[in-house]
Length: 501
Image 1 (spheres, rainbow, N blue to C red):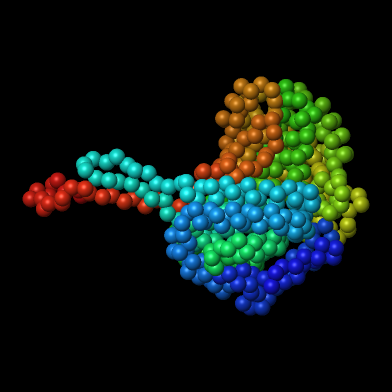
Image 2: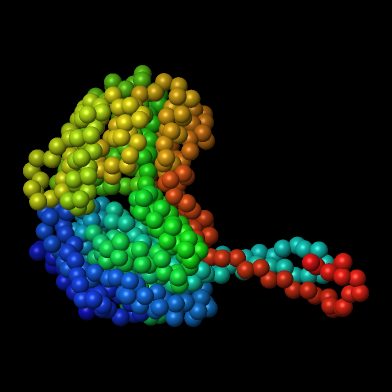
């Protein structure tokens, strides 16, 4: 039965897992609530899958894997393009589900869903264009490689951008001939289930795409540990990523991880301060700071720090925080009571470590049952402070003054994380010099982050391994097979010294 959304009541019904082309509840019959973070009220009951449900989903994916691998690449591409059309047709419902479940304000959810066909089309176009190579070897021999799919791939999805990250992970896997088992975050399962409906309507064979809902410690861990899973893609916290890598190691599954970050936004002395403030605000307030690349460390050159802070205050005063379905909202709530408590605990820690410069309280006019935290800025922050070194995942920024490039680079690199950075200024030589020296996976100059399907994304150090998106993502979902053919007659040799080994 199809997932049904009642937009006026802000509820949904008929949430079921999708396994082997069919809908089902959890085998044990258990469910759990998913809540509207704007109000704290329950949206729907979602099946609480466990290891037995994961076994069924992986078995379905494994049964479909060989036929899907040898389905013509042009057919796989066509199905992905048909799926893109289905997403466009159902964009309004998908966006409303995403906004309701994840706390994105509606206009942002609509923008995100509207972009998803770009990812599906980009990876559809790679299905029949990537491949192996021929190799020149000594003798009259033909040597070449094939790129083959891994087989069953697991996709463990976070709650901050649930549908976009599902698609950026599964689209290349499907295009390259893998089958997928998706475990969405327990806080945001609904858009994945609606997407599964569209996969079925688009005509994908049963078992190629599967969704198991449930808690990470139950369904997620079982999926990562499953011996028939050949590749795992995970986006989320560094600590959970480490656990997934350990589970994958037991059966030597390939792992791609995009993990935590504590990303710097660097303001150079010649930066346009109005533009710099706008980039900084978007960088740490986007989705209430619940973004892996969030620019929560503001490195502002000492010569312009006072002027920057004055402009920052004026801009934050204009930021509209509220219910995601209200007109004009620019920032919604945190995802859950757990996250709300965590962020507020860090604000209290910050008050003991630094100077609370702005905010730190609940925005006026927000629903008391919702998980709202207002924009918060600390100054006089030591580089060793917890609010400066630990990922808060909320709308909380720390401001740090700098004077020389060496001082800046040392401060930025003195972190366990290395996901992303933003550099703002006019001296392109200085900007590029710094970009080359800092230890991060991506740098944006004079702009804020805009994720695209054709550009690689990932981190250094404890921010992850591998790259999502772009041509680089092909490596996540393929393995190399070498084939060699001897074109000369093979004769017995009297002297075995000349044998190949």
